[in-house]
Structure formats: C-alpha cells, structure tokens
Length: 179
Image (cartoon, rainbow, N blue to C red; front, side, top):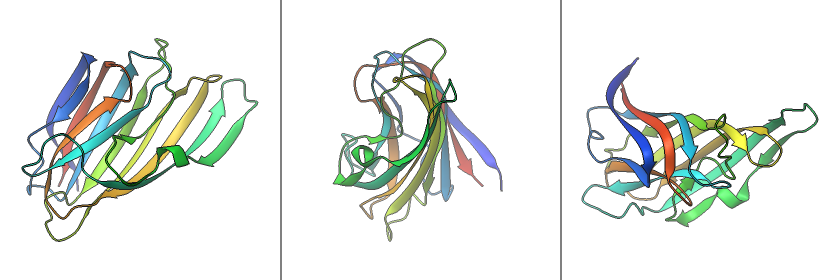
C-alpha cells in the first residue's frame, strides 16, 4: 500500500484551502498532509469541514472527539487531556484539529487527516487526524488526536480547511490517495 499524489494547495493569506475535485471512488482512503500551517491571527483554531456530492457550504453534520498530549519548553509541565470544547455531536462547524495557536514565526501546525471510504453511499464516512502545534500559553507543544464521522450516507467529494478566525497566513496541504 502506498500514497499516490493527487494535488496540493498553498496558503498566502487565504481564508480557506479547499479540494473541490479529486475525492472520488478511485481510492478507498485519502490522506491530507498539512505542512507548516501558520495562522494570521493569534489564539485561533485550525480545522476542516466537508461537502457531500452535490452539496455546497461546507456544513455537513459531524460527530467527533478530540484529545491532546502536551509538554512545555521549560520541561515543567505535561498533561494528557480530553478536549470537550473541540467535540461535535451532530454539529456543522469546522472540526478542530488545534486551538489557541500562536502566530510567532517559529510556530505552525503540521499533521495528517485520513478520510475513509468517502464514496460510500451505504455507510457514514469516518476520519482520523493527528497533528502537532505550539499552544499560545507558555510554549506548549501539543499533539492532538481527532476522530469522528460525517453523519450522511451521501458520497463526500469536497473538503475545506480554515482557521476559526482570521486567515491561513502560510502553509501547504497535500492530498494523496492510498492505493
């Protein structure tokens, strides 16, 4: 099994980064590799949302969960926490993969989101994501794990990434099919 490159999008003060083609029945899994996603606004979150085939607005219903592990630069604080504020129970917001991100030039979000069987019209579409970034309160490296499902049996064919507030200053997202 290997990754097959499909497309990339690069931010430059962008409100969103979206893939509106390339997600189809060709692959049963798709991976999105986020590289150095940098916010334009301090203390914001980075996330994603979907469109079902023929839909618009990036507002599909999501049920999800998120937890994080963290360690500060001074080696004086660590924790492992369930992050209820980033969960959704049949919500339509962008699903968080981070929160309270820093805008310093040496800080950004990087991670991988995997989307399973997005072309299925029998079952809901599941996703898992993991990422790492610097939290804005004391230089904590935060490793996040997000998982859930898109609560529709319609095929999913589009994805959008955005900050909760402000633009995506810089960064690239690569889309791969898993074959």
